[in-house]
Image (tube, rainbow over all chains, first blue to last red; front, side, top):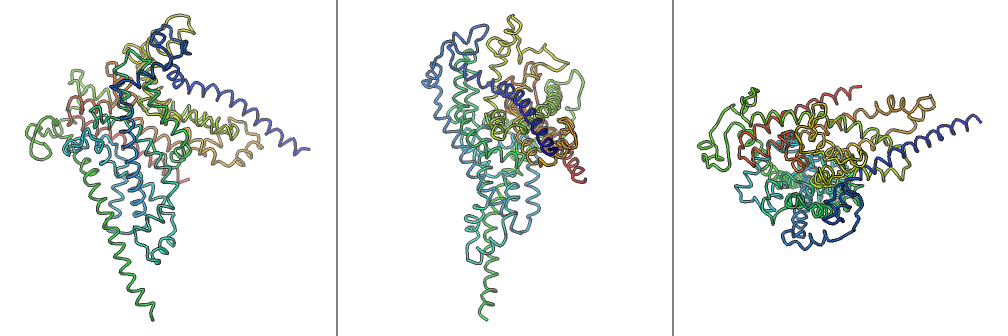
Length: 285
Length: 329
C-alpha cells in the first residue's frame, strides 16, 4: 500500500510538470517560428497588400506572382548561384574530410620528428580568430589571381585545424591490433588508411561532413570579400544583393529569401540528427 | 630458422614504408600550412606596423615600405588616444571595442537565461515530443545568418514590419518605430538598434546551447533526481541543487563558446544595420571589414584585428583556468 502511494505521487507530479512544460513550450515555439511564418506569408502577398498600413498577417489575396517574377528575372539566375554554392561547399567537405581524417589518424598513431611542434601549432590556429588572417589571405588570393574565382574559396580551405584535432581524438580509439594486423597482411600504409581507418571513423565523417557543409553553405564574410563579381557569387551574397536592389518591393525579396532559405533548411532538417550530434560532441560554432 | 630472417627483413621495409607514407603526407601538410596559415598570420601581425593599402605599389617585399611606410607602434599608440578630438578612425575603433564588449556581455546572460530553462522544460516532456521541440528551436541555427538578418529586417521594418503591426493592434494606434534606424532611441542607455540586433542574434544562436544542454541533461541519471524527490526536493530545489551543479562544466564551456563567437559577430549586423545608425552597432569585425575593404586602410585594420585576437585569446585563457579548477574537485 505505502509503496504504491509513493510511486503514484511522483508520477502524478511528473504529469503536472509535463503539462506545465507544454503550456510554456507550445507558445514559445510558436513565437520562435514567427519570423519564418511572417516571411513565408509575405512572399505570397501582392505588392499592393504588402504596402498596406497597418500590415496584414495572412495573405488576403494569395498569389504566386512574386515567385514567377523572380524565376523569370534575367538578372537573377538562381541556378547559377545554387551551383556556385554547391561547388564550394561540396569541394570543401570532400577535401576537409580527407585531410582531417588522414592527419588526425597520423597524429594519433605515428611518431615523427617535429610532431609535437606541428600539433601545437595546429591547436594554436584553432584559438586564433580568422579575422587576423583575413586581410593577408585576401592579398595572397589577389597575388595569385584567385579573386572572383571559386578556387579562391576552395584552395585556402583544404586543411581545417579543428577537424584534425577532432579526428585525432577519434582515431586514438582505433585499436592498434587492427592496424598492425593489416600491416602483417602486407597492406600498404595508404591502404590501411583507406580501408580500415576511414571505416572506423565513418560516423564522425558523416557528422563533421554535415557541419562543414552547413558552415560553407551559409558563409558570408569571406565570400563577400573574395567574390565581388556577380557570376561567381554564392547564395548568401546574392540574397543580400537582391534585397538591397529591391528594398522597396519586399514582397519580392521575401519570396527570394524563401527560395534561398527553404530548400537548404529542408535538407538540414532531414539531416539534423547528425548536425546535433556533431555540435554536442564538439561544441563547434 | 626461416621466420627470423623474414622478420628482420620485414621490419626495416615496414619502417621505410611508414617513412614514405609520412613523407608523402606530412611534408605537403607542413608546406601547405606554412603558406596558407603561418604566412598570413605573420603577415597580419607585420601589417599592423605599417600604413598599408593594396592600391599602392610599395616596396619589393610584399608591397611593404616605399608608399606603404612602416609606422612602428603608431597604430597602437593612436588607439590609446581617448581625447574627444581624436581622429574619426580612432573614435570608431573605441566605439567598436565598446559595442563588441557590450554585445557579448548582453548576449551571454540572455542566452543562458533562455536556453537553460528551455532545455529543462524540453527535457521534461514525453520522449517523442522532445525531438519536435528541439527541432523548432534549433531550426534558426541551420538557416544562413544572412537569411536570418533579412527575415528580422521584415519584422523591424518601420512601416511594413510585423513588430510595429502587432504593437499597433495592441495599442489601437499606428506605430512607426524605426527599430534599427533611429539613433535617438535608447533603453537604459543602450541603443535600441543594438538591442534589436541582439534579439535577432539570440534567436539564431540559442539553438546551439540548447542542444548542448539537452544532451547534458539527458546524461544525468534519472535515479539521482528520483532519490532527491523521494527526499522531498521540489522542482526548484532539484534544479538548484542537483541539475545546476551537474551541468556546471557544460555551462562554463558553452559560455566560453558563446562569448568567443559573439565577439566575432558580423553577418547579422552587416545585413541589418551595416553598423549604423551612427555607428551604434559598429562591432569590431565591422570596423575591420570597413577599414580594410572599403577604405583600404589595411594596416590599421590589421592592428584592430590584433586587439580582437588579444580579447578572444584572454577569454580562452580564462576558460582554461576555470575548467582546471572545475576538474580539481
